[in-house]
Image: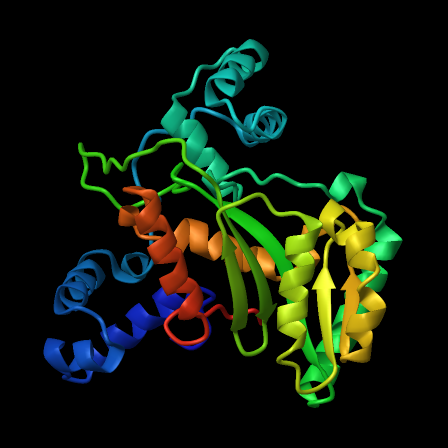
Length: 315
């Protein structure tokens, strides 16, 4: 009970000692927090096999089809062809001479910590790593200044919504499918200023294309409500680099609004991108896609309730 390397063997030995001292099966069950059938079976095994009855023995079952080395080959092939189980199985058969089922390959993949999930688009290969790291440090510094109450920090961006649903997954009964309408429609553009610390969002909806004049008008409106120095993080969209926009930067700075640009190809630094994903993938109900009027109504309801009904934990 004290020295065996197996925790299960130590527990079982304890049960046998308690039984020998006159404890009932119910009492042993309560002491070790195990089922009474487990205790009963253990005592029978002790009486029949003695010390051998305290240990787990190899269980019968079908031997694995692939050796450990062959499993490594399967994993290597999975890395080469992550989107095609069929191709991995075919190549594995050519190399090892063994054929396995898709279920077996999936089980091997899960054992190796692989998971079937959505592939993400990425622009990281185009990033200037040094500039991105520098920007991350500067944003961290700004976040600390905001926590101290020295500034307000907002993230600005635009996103478009239409009647083509962006809904990758949903819980559905087996054998049934949830169907929602999908159609072409005018694009509803949303421009937003997001304070990630307190989930404050100031947004503007437009049913027309966004140009520099519209972006400038939104910044003008936003600057009217400032109570302290406010830093706004933006990306390098053409409307943000236009002459119309850049000519206003000095005027906004006098009002306490400072523009901070993130490096090209680094959308992950602009936290408002997360807000757009939450709206599109989680918050917009199916009925939003029934009509353009529904879409506008639901967008206005969500944007008006960010910070209360709708919140994101950015920590």
